[in-house]
Length: 226
Length: 226
Image (cartoon, rainbow over all chains, first blue to last red; front, side, top):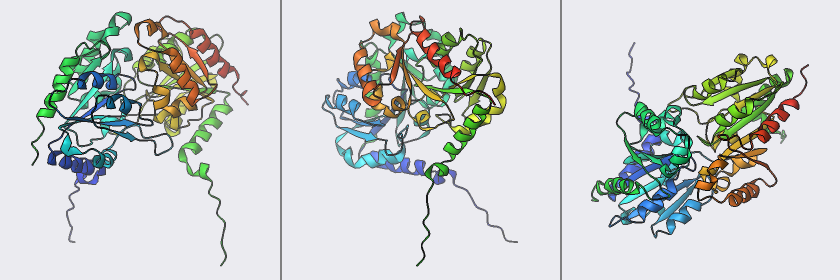
């Protein structure tokens, strides 16, 4: 009996990956570097971006804001006079808990990619699902607040593992917490050995320079537009 | 032409609701009251439970711990000498971001319902999806940390709306934050008018008595076992 060997192209079966590649192609066409910024709710992503992007030099930055509902963060970032597009995920009953490649794709027409060098995607506040969906980004980064406890890398390992940079934020509160910073750093390194860790206080500005430098360096490494 | 009128029984089409009802029937059979406790990662659910359940009087309490991975919280609560069952959601790529009725159902055989009066389900840390899945509970409660910012009720309205009690935790840190407690309370009331709000510090113990009283009262209202 004749048998046909079927090669299952697993990646091609994953619609999210296919769409992420299409997004990537669009970003590359206009030389846009993309950072997917993730965290638990209230870890300080928006405040960190406000601080970091206030001094962005020549880099033309745009932001895509992912939220279940509302545009509070987009309104805050618009004050920096940068293009901000709001993406709400509450089409369903309670709202999607993450951005996926298709949602990002739906926002691309509003982004005017030819006018930006660096796109920061501020994902929905959640330590689980956002890490599971590629959206076409160059780099993933996460913000982890010291108020969340030392155990989070062990409880949400994929999020910590998938990021190139882990920003440990709210370090101005360390004196007021029963918190072992060394234990957090140990736990981060246990799930993602050697990952770059930055310590910041978006509130006081401490350490924000290093985050800004990293962010803008991603922007500079972006492919040159054709 | 003869037309048959078809009544779509929407609830019956939802497998989660069907299974939640089956869970409820099992809980009722043994007179077990069930609280579904939710929050963002690191809001302090486990510390609050440690404090509250240390003094539980005659009420026989059991805990079902939902985590993507690991059993850190279950290990902590086991020290209280109460039955704790760990439910990990990491069967998939990155893990499920919530407990659903079917996951809770899978844990029921390990719970020995006849030996407890009150079951506390500590859900996965996430402000979106846990609010969307009924698991057969009597009451939903959430913990919201003041470190997360005043805007969370507006950004995650379903979570705040679906709960009977909102516990505002970490109030010992208020002096060290740029945080407007009145604005948070206003925003909570805006999405869930009249909802009961408790202010606690699981770290210092302030306000924990009121949470304990609420929790144990749910336990006492549980149906009498047949």
